[in-house]
Image (cartoon, rainbow, N blue to C red; front, side, top):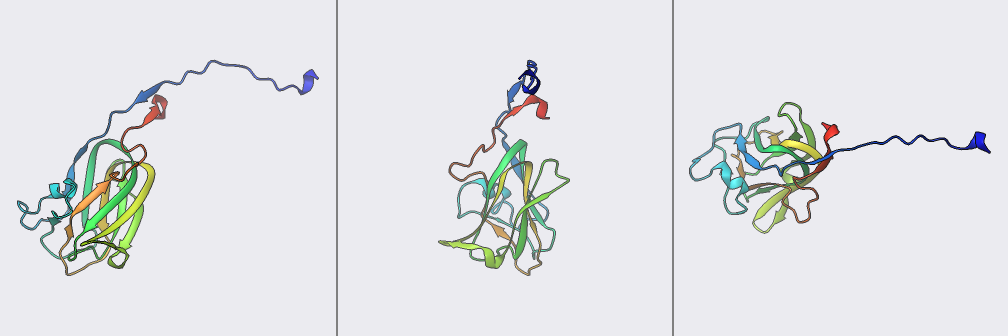
Length: 173
């Protein structure tokens, strides 16, 4: 019967899509002074070499950060921190931000949570594709140890979905 029929008007909808460029890594920053920066620079965090490191010049303090910055928003998936056998983070959170002002925690750990992998100790968490331009490790525990961080990997895992390219409607922004 006509009175029970579903009435639907067809309206032409147009959805425009744009391909965002691949976001590039800008650089790393640390909130404290480095020990011998010529030998242990922040660039060691992204060189893919688990034998090179950045090294802070003093004891670990709550609130100290190591931050990775990108040219544009990325879909944050796997984040992996690689430490050596000494001077590991006593406790920290991994956080992401689109604006470097508001931060969202995607993981937390203490030294006891680190996983031994050969001579390295690692912590891995996942942002589940959440958007970010900044990814940081923020210390949550004081320690008399200095901090040595060998790699700070973001979306380096095999098959990390939509690493830094995304297809999105232009109306989404």
